[in-house]
Amino acid sequence: MKIKLNDIKPSPEPIRSKWDEEAMEELKKSIAEQGLIVPIKVRRLDGEYEIVYGHRRVEAMRRLGWKECEAIVEGME
Image (cartoon, rainbow, N blue to C red; front, top):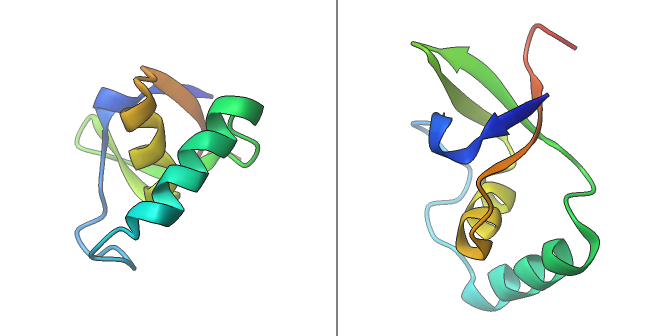
């Protein structure tokens, strides 16, 4: 399912609290060249979506200027 990045909010307790900027640049480059290979996973929450996994990929896509992405919606797989 395609979801607008503006409708996705981070988990209140993400695994990472800071980004390794060098690794983020590598991820951005990979997504720009190959697209999103592994979709993120989200759950519905108050009309929006909360990230279950894929926080770094969402951040990389936002930095690339993407407006939407493929996502697995928890409970709909």
